[in-house]
Length: 108
Image (cartoon, rainbow, N blue to C red; front, side):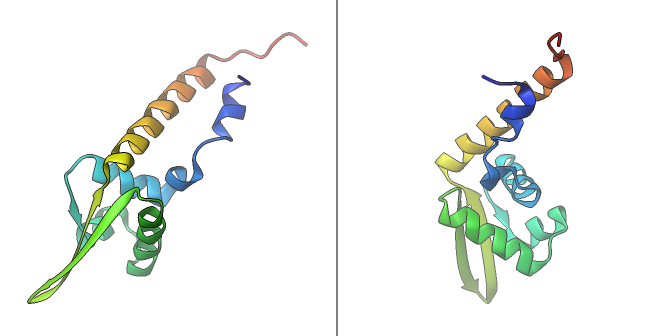
């Protein structure tokens, strides 16, 4: 194991990318969320949110359900794998934060 800073550079970029981390973290706190709700709380444009959801869906981190009961509606939820991945990612971030906070450089 290297320094905490080397370990930070090795984070899972699929989840760690800021917009995707915001999306998956929001979904971690609920069973599912409407596309427009996710757009509002993340501040992402429709196209940007859709692009990030497509990447997450391709990696089986989220499931996207589209329905049309009078008007189109898109609902998103974390998969079981996605819930574990995001929770583990946050745990790792917290451990790395603590390690970086307490890290001291070796004597040169």
